[in-house]
Image (tube, rainbow over all chains, first blue to last red; front, side, top):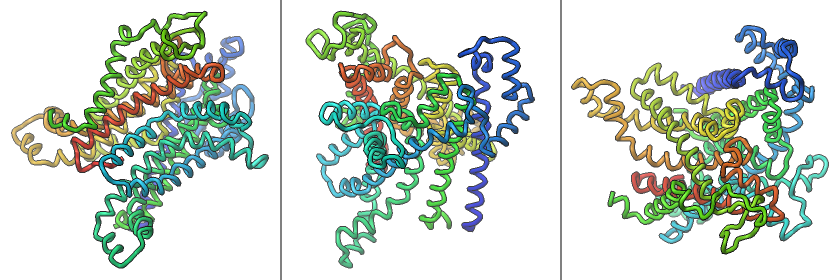
Length: 317
Length: 274
């Protein structure tokens, strides 16, 4: 198969997955036991049949289900997810107002986790022996399983005890105060990144150990390449493919984990939006947020897939 | 079995998990206090001889709540992972055995479920079904179905090609008999390793959901809930938050280490892979 046909096939896959995701998200809300409309109304107004009928008509619940779905998707594609039931603001604006902190947190965590994983993994590949193996395993497994929200709380506690003057909670936009923005995000990003760091450095280590035994490494050494060049130029390249695939999957973990870590550090991101929507039973907002985040994740994995095609010539063969 | 136990790491991990598991199962007898018993006088106390890990904002014994919290965590996670194994595993086996359209449709459905970020989908499901520990279990179970399906399909494809499956078919064994009697037993090591690893991940997801108020509801002792309650009194008395989070870590750590060690022991080719 040529590269172009492969890319087209992946694109088709992407479309099918996106359509199915939208169907699931659309019908999820309909599984709510009882009358969702009455529940939505019940939170702050008196529930009367007229009000229910009025809201039903407003959301379009009085139409056939396929018509509803088509209308919903059509509007969503144009960026129209309706208006938030409580604030009256367009849902897309609500999402836009909350998406940046989460995006920034996710990207920063990815940079910290993936960036530190390479040197850590290379270092770990150099350490051999029974004791080092055992110690590294225990440390990486601990890193993998530390609850990031707990780590965040412990960090806040430590900071409040040892450096009470440092402001670690909340969020300020980068455009307003770049230094304050970064200093507030570093701790949550690190808490979120630790499991990724542990996972990826293990991956780098095992791929390095794998390739260090290969003939081409011996050849590189024989031609007099420096140890540094052998490690980073020859052995590490082998680790790149599983590394990039994992980074794609990690994005999903990060987007989910960010929801929790944001709560710990009082960051007004998508996590706050989603939890607020659940608490207020603001289902259209919840629906739209889940759809947007999931589509973002699907597209990231699609890009990773394409990268994979670009890097590994074997996939194309 | 003796062969397995020769490995020290595996032995250590198994013991580590077994101790916590037994304490969880026999929580009522192991815990020094009733986890719900309030004591207004002894509120927010640090560790002492009477309360080894201190008391929370209602004067409840933190150690007792942690032991009962382990029970709640394990119950939700085990229920979720075993259901996911049953449903996802069966789907993966069926896809591998019948191939063709069955395979394509089943695995495409799994791809779609897999397209959601794990915690986000779990949160969405809990939001729809209502926050309870049982719905948290259902949510985690659904999220893990595609993972088991994918994990079992790959190796099952290889086994379905083998001579003994062809042989079984030749002597007239039925599909169900072949799948569950001839294919499944050969996947035992994959199942064992992944169940342990995913159980560890499920513990963390359950704790996250409870932390967000979307899992186990008060006053039932739950580690995630304790952490979130402890956070409110963090600067006055950090013990509840510190110890409950550490208890989550211990449980998840033991299970991941166990899965890791099992993988090394059962499949030496995979040694050291993450």
